[in-house]
Image (cartoon, rainbow, N blue to C red):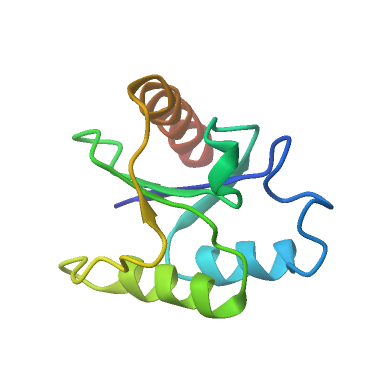
Length: 116
């Protein structure tokens, strides 16, 4: 996975979760992968949402309810592992096709922009 999207839309990354250090979450994820805060990615019932995207083949892994440092560390460890196994089931979620399509488009755009 080469791009991580950290939703910071209507529910994620906002005062809805006052106990979450959103800046620290971005720093932890950014230490292991190219990470971008994004507008709403769609599945608000799972906020805070983090999506790992391979911009070459479109593979996506969605994580929901990433609300504390342990969850963030679990996702970061998974991102840093060369084989991305085992998947942290506690926070793994399935995305709707429309959300996945939007996330892929956004990830590819942000990745190109970061490389420019």
